[in-house]
Length: 465
Image (cartoon, rainbow, N blue to C red; front, side):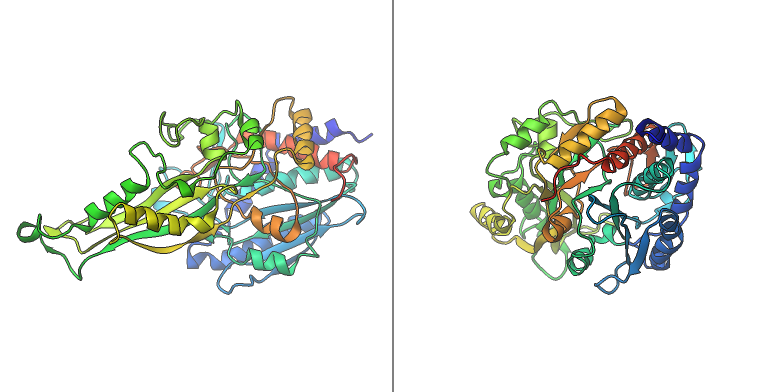
């Protein structure tokens, strides 16, 4: 008789025999970067050749749509409907990647080739996001095989090819396809666990608000000997503007960038939550950021200010001149509790009060909105219980991951709760050279999702809203 344990064992047997690695290698070999115009043909190829035949074998009816915004990657939708009265889960993923950065990977590694090394698979997209949505489909394949081709529930899929360009066009597309994409919950995978060995559920993501600080004083540089000490230096003025926004320990001084408080539900779910990037990750610097918060509260429940880039003069070839201008591109990572309409006006008031009227604020706005489902949502607790049963260990729930994802699109237009189940970790080096997926974490994610698919077909899911 088919059984839950046998379905999970089937999934793990395929993994251990090399089946998943072979699938991952085929997907990574398609250089589907959306950040390089040369990658444009491979965006369609990834969906048409890499994913669609697999979906056909799983019984999905799929379609590839042009992006509503010209110049951005296509979007695949697929549906596997057994009985409309049964629960329906929506999967999401993205098949586009950042640039390969081929010249920056260490010797022996190539971004478009999966290279096994110890407990890692190296390759662009192994963690972000090809490996993650492949795990979920491989788990579904095992459960369908165990159940003789039936699931006992319905599955829909959205796979976009412009996430690394801000998911441009996805909001408009989902709004157009609202009826076709209707579901009871979104259960999908992206981003990192709180620690490599601790299974995690995130119920949302922080958003990103960007702006430029600009000091432009003259059309060209002037001799540093003749004018230094007499004429204003834009770099010094810019440095003072940044110092007015955050102190030397990273505490945000523009308090309107922050929520009025941290919700009790957020603080409670983060009580005792660890934060660890694993080997090769950046350090957690004690005392950096908002005083009085734990590391988990800082990145999963609060806001942060970051200077992403700054420039004055020509650092690669400095000349003896007072530069004509200076610029910094800044970012606020914010939670849904913060009021983004206050960010730009509050910053202007703050700089003016510091005597920095000369510093202009340009291009302020949201790049990716924040989103959050309550950590106590029934679908979150259902998924947590399923995972703990499959894995025999604690599953950490966090109110939102530290990075950004387009969960707001699905909340706003479909009204679904968000259940993000990441299969990666903070040290995976996504967006940089030497990106990799941990084999042990991937294997555990496969077992967890096999259990979720099995339980979805068994009934007992939260009632429809």
